[in-house]
Image 1 (cartoon, helix red, strand yellow):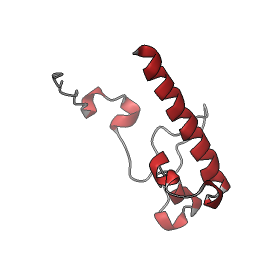
Image 2 (cartoon, rainbow, N blue to C red):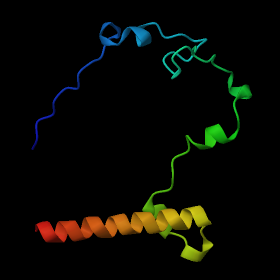
Image 3 (tube, rainbow, N blue to C red):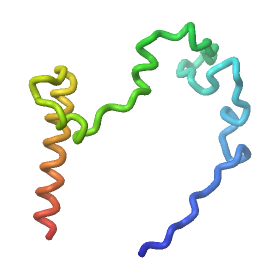
Image 4 (cartoon, rainbow, N blue to C red):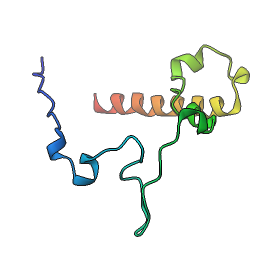
Length: 98
């Protein structure tokens, strides 16, 4: 059995100075412009609804396979094909390495 190694603990003193002073009012370190300022944080109500959909996990292949392919939404069909192809490539790689 493989020995488990402890993960290193990152402390605030090792973080770059820009991140050592994180704020609850400003998105520290998000500015990419040379002379710009960091944008102010907004409350959850002010953020667009689609933003919360990004945090939802996508369905795994096993969940997609429980439904008929024609019943899936077009995005889910593309994801099913992608995951099925990836699984086939992995299976072929295992056969080649054995």
